[in-house]
Image (cartoon, rainbow, N blue to C red; front, side, top):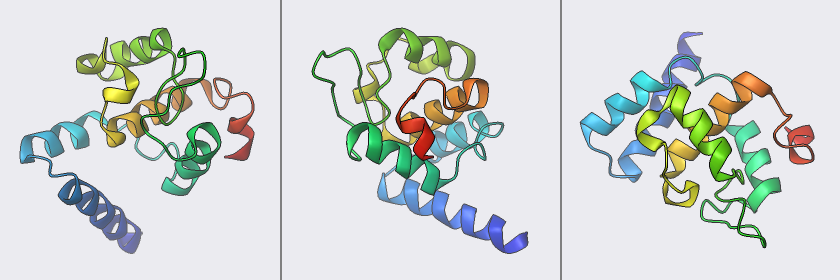
Length: 124
């Protein structure tokens, strides 16, 4: 258990160091994602992301309706943001930082499971 916590802390630290986050941004992320952080593992997120967008956080569907690594439509994005991350409400998913796209996906998964991803959700 202790080793797992250290590995998670190290992975989060590495993510934010490479993303050049401020201490305030790191604190906001850690505080706001506590309840959903364990919903999907990094590997599960990666499998979903590969299926949805081939790991492209700026992916846009041919129709333009679905956007970002997990192919959110704007109404779903805004709905989840309103409950979990209000500062992301109205933001285009492709303009959200990768870690926020991951956090939004975990939040939506915590409520609806694989249902929003009818094909790729089965690969998680």
